[in-house]
Length: 131
Image (cartoon, rainbow, N blue to C red; front, top):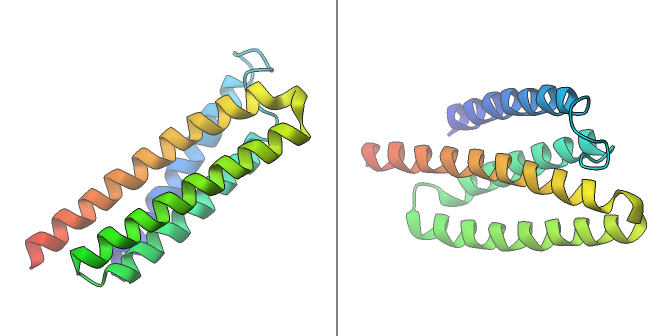
């Protein structure tokens, strides 16, 4: 499991750095109202949430698929509610940046969620082969 967490962490850092580089480059190509000025904080937010959730899921599963499914559904629900709360609070406090924030947040959501799902599927496949 420690190797799985280390591999996930390394790949998550690489994904985050690529996302940062792409976003930084896109800030010069796309109108500034479409990319939120708080994009570095959004990347940090998704990095932290992804790392914490992945570690939690691996520890909770313990190789048992029923526990993993319950933990996955619980964390997914909590994440969605947290993400919705972050969006609503930010938009209410910063109406001028609402469109850019929502677009930026949603883009990072798709990127990091896809990465999480791919990583979880790889983990499940390897754990099934080992059992």
